[in-house]
Length: 207
Image (cartoon, rainbow, N blue to C red; front, side, top):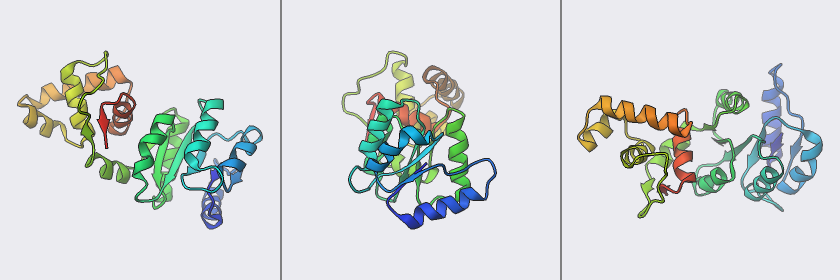
C-alpha cells in the first residue's frame, strides 16, 4: 500500500511494481486519514509511508496503525533532511526507512527484507546519521549487555569498523569480533542498521 500525497510519486511506484509478477499495489492513499480508513479492507503486506502529509501525517498515521496492527510492516519514505523524524518512527516500530531518491532495486530489497521479518534502513541514510550520533550523558544501560559490550555497541553505531574500535579501546580486533558477535546474539540484531535501532530504543544514543 502506498501512502503519499504526491500523485506522481505514487503513479511512478505503481508503474515500477507493475513490472513485477510477485508484487502489486493493492491500495493507495494521499494522507494518513484516508490510509487509516482504508487499512482494514486493504490488508497490505507492506506499507510505504510518507512523513509529511496533510490531515494526518505519517508519524501519527503509523502510530495509530501499529496500535491496531503491531506486526504491520511499515517502510517510511523520507527526503533528505527528514532525519529528525527517524528516531520517532523507529520508536514506533516501523520496519524500514528509505530515501525517496533510492533506486527501485533498493525498494525491492526493503520489501523482501521486511517480509522475512527483518528491518531495512537505507545505507545512505545510516551513513548520514551515524556521523551525528553520540552517547547519551547518562545512558539507561541494558541488563543484557555488559559495560564493555555497551561501549562497543555505541562505537559500532557511530560507524567505526572493528579494527577502529580495537585501536580506540587498545584491545585486539579478535576481541572486538567476539564482543560484536555476542552483541548481535544477545540483541537479536543482524547488522549495523538493527543495532542503531536497538541503541535508540534503549536510550543509549541520541542525535
